[in-house]
Image (cartoon, rainbow, N blue to C red; front, side, top):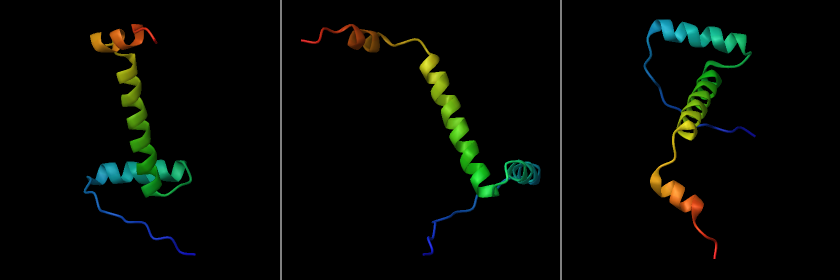
Length: 68
């Protein structure tokens, strides 16, 4: 069974494309999958930054609320 993915094009400079191709080869994957992995890593990194931030006042209040 053939599965068709919806795709789109993204314009990047030649140096970035060469780096993507190098990374994809190093990871034994496609350029498209290397982009997917990069986006996921960036999202996870951003999530880590957000989780490391101080809790806001309303978040502390919610965590300290009584359950009952």
